[in-house]
Amino acid sequence: MRMARYDDLMALYENPIEHACDLHLGQVFYVENVQKPEDLCDSAWETLLPFVKELSEGGGNFFDGWMKNPHSAMLSCNDGFRPVSFYVEVVD
Image 1 (tube, helix red, strand yellow):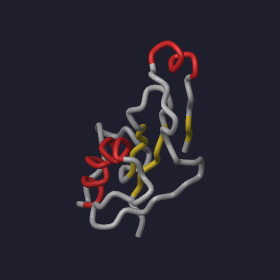
Image 2 (image 1 turned 90 degrees about the vertical axis):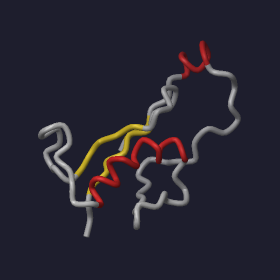
Image 3 (image 1 turned 180 degrees about the vertical axis):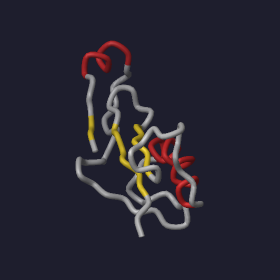
Image 4 (image 1 turned 45 degrees about the horizontal axis):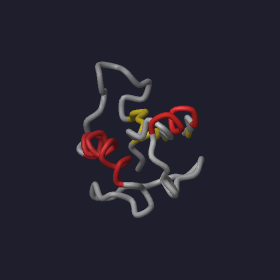
């Protein structure tokens, strides 16, 4: 859904990284059997997994009505320098 990059924070706090993220805006992942999609980084998957698992088991309505669609969630990976926001929803 959205990608950010905080170069000022990276300059202050991060050791240089040659290659941090291969994701691109508009990329779509489908999850089957709660298995990590091949091109999704491990860090993002760790953030998404509890919500994906709950949705795959028929759950949802996170935080008592947080999302307009109760079978969805808006989540971000835990990279504070270049966060990527994901819209996760149940599809048939």
